[in-house]
Amino acid sequence: MKKMAPPPEVNLFNEKNNGESLLNLIQKGYVKSAHDVSLGGIITAVSKMSIMGNKSIKFNKSKNLINEIDYLFAEDQGRYIIEINPKDLKEVNEILDKNSVYHEELGIIIEKDMIINQKTKVTIDELKSYNSNWLTNFMSA
Image 1: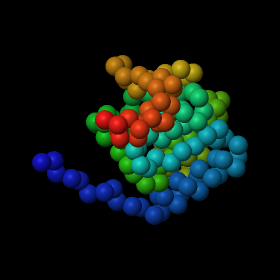
Image 2 (image 1 turned 135 degrees about the vertical axis):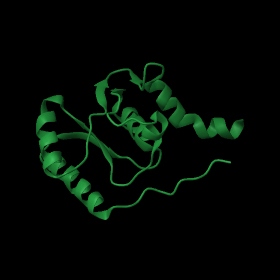
Image 3 (image 1 turned 180 degrees about the vertical axis):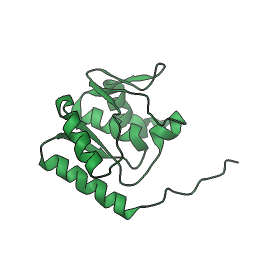
Image 4 (image 1 turned 30 degrees about the vertical axis):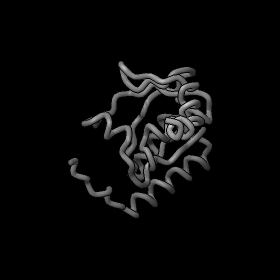
């Protein structure tokens, strides 16, 4: 039997700081799209963004990657994924650094497949199909 870990600790200061920093970036016009990282983790948030925006991402390898599954599916509070124009990266990094917000570049926006690693990629059409049909497929199995 797998031992369950406790939920992540909630840090209200960081949550407020991260949310206010995101709002600041939005008000300055740097954010093209954004999504919270909560239920389902990074991979779910990026998948939803890909479905809505009809474009996807080629993931970079995380600087702090210990376990790829934990990294992609970990549910945590006060985290956001933002899409910005690459020309604004320096200014956005400066604002986040000034506000002591941990951040890293997840990847680059691409037109077709979500490329997770060297072995795993998913098309936007597959994401849309999984999103639209999973309950029906689950119930009929």
